[in-house]
Image (tube, rainbow, N blue to C red; front, side):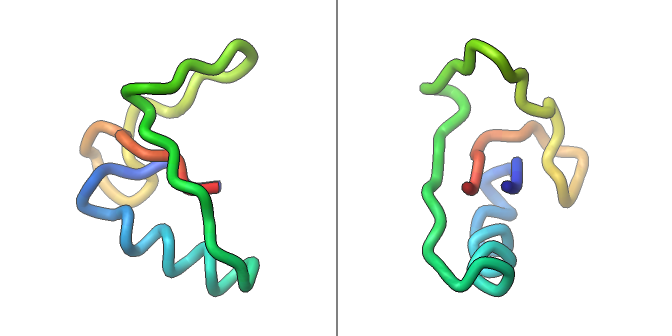
Amino acid sequence: MYVVCKEHVELAIDMFVDEYEDAPDIVDLKETKFSDWDPPVKCKECENKAEFLVV
């Protein structure tokens, strides 16, 4: 699972495929709320706002 900004979505997809050998689902964090989990505020790769969850 990777929480990233728009700039790093492609990198996160590549890392997911390398690790799991399967295509990930991309979740837009602006449109999705989780009842038991608060996503990180910042991108895993930089200091930008996290916008997508790659799972």
